[in-house]
Image (cartoon, rainbow, N blue to C red; front, side, top):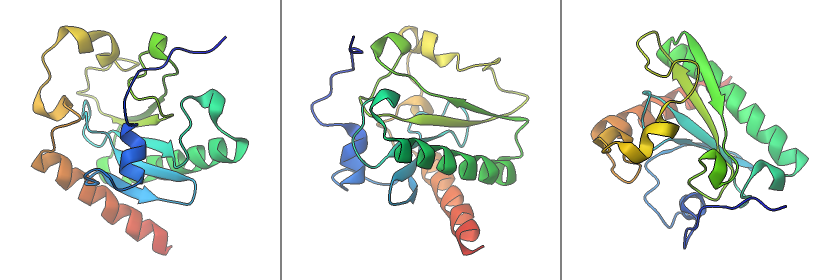
Length: 164
């Protein structure tokens, strides 16, 4: 059985990797992964970690890519602890349309959670997306000054940690 994937003429994440798109949200890139500030900021600092190679779902990752994604997510979580002082770090990942996947390229969400978050124990936006108008911070295609500043702040933390 094959998972049904969202249809997209050009993979949004592949276009970022190829630098065919505005790359304002690239936080860090390694040989196997890229860490991006999520264009939809349901929580300030929400990021995704993706494999460089196009892999639609977790089922398509190599063992090496899967490990590299988790290493990048762990590094990001440590940076988020320093940058945002959250009360938790949420990781979530969708595979196929049936789970809410919107871009046909594996991506692991890494979210700093705070006491004032309306997320409960998970990402409530998955069920609400179709029923709400999108504010600027939730529209992945809209680049805002707040999003640029958050991306720059996270890049600064990555540079600091890469020197250690």
